[in-house]
Length: 211
Image 1: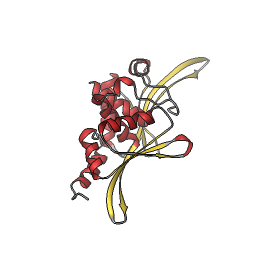
Image 2: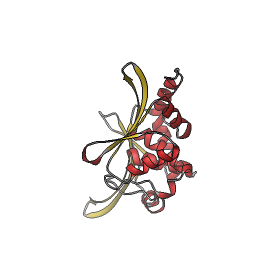
Image 3: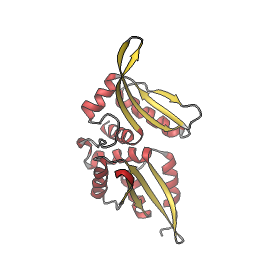
C-alpha cells in the first residue's frame, strides 16, 4: 500500500494541487478545502488509474469534473480528512508548488522513490523521439518549478544510476533530461510507467535494434 501512496505523491507533485481557503456562503465565511488532480481528458486509461489510486490512498470516492471546451478533467475531493492526511501525515505542501514542492523524506529511499518518480513522470513528464544528424534516440523530460524537489529528483536518479542532465530555464525552472535507449531501458526497468501512452511509445522504441 505504501508504494501506491508513493506513486500518488508523484502524481500530486506533477499535476496535483492542495488548496485551503475561505469562501463566502450566504452571510457566512466557510473554510474550503480541495485536493485536485488535473489530467488530459482524452487519456481514459490513465484517468481511471488515477481515480482508483486516489480512492485507495484517501479512502474516498473522488469526484470527476470534465471541463467544457477543454481537453481537461479534474479528479478531486473536498474532504477535510484527505487534506489533513496528505499534509500532516504524508508531508505534502499546500499549493502553490513554487518554492515549496518537496518529496517527503520517508519516500526518498530506493524502495519508494521509484514509484514517486513514476507518478511524476506520468503526469508532468514526456517521452519524445529525436533525430540527431540521422541518429534516432529517445528522451524523457520532466519540467520542474523552483523547489527542493529539483535536487531531490536528481539525487534519486544518481542513486539509481540513471544518467541525466539538468537544463536551466527561465525564472529558476529546470528540465530533467534522460537521453538514449540505454537510459530509457533503465528507467522502465527500475521505475516504469502506469500511463499506457508512455509504455506503448517506449516499447516501440525498445524493440528496435540498439543504436
